[in-house]
Amino acid sequence: AKQTRGSISVMGIKICEDVEECAFNKPHVFQVGYLEKGKMFHLYIQAKDHDMREIWKFHIRKLCTAYNDQRMQTRYHAGHFKKDKMDLLCKRRQKQHRVPTSVPV
Image 1 (cartoon, rainbow, N blue to C red):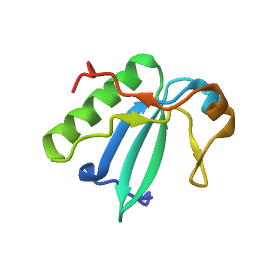
Image 2 (tube, rainbow, N blue to C red):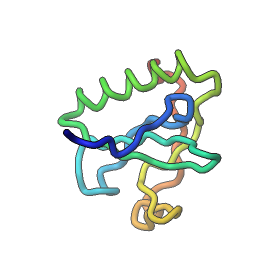
Image 3 (tube, rainbow, N blue to C red):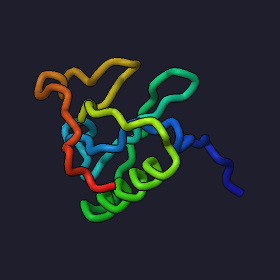
Image 4 (cartoon, helix red, strand yellow):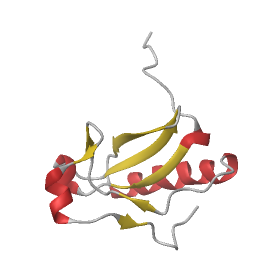
């Protein structure tokens, strides 16, 4: 039987957004940013395709809306973090993104 590597509380999720392809040189990656014991962590997930990524994000946001009484963050980094710092390649290419106001939840 496989062991669980860990879990994320829906209550701690603050970000569920796309990651730019340059961050991992892989398509269809998105991030789930969450608070755990007061510290922010990021889980990066690669979906099979664009549609699957959108489905995953839709359902995660829907759960967060239903169970999380705190709001999601309105800004996020579309690159990835290395040892608590933004990836320098993506940092040079872009600034923090704002979450679109028309995000379906």
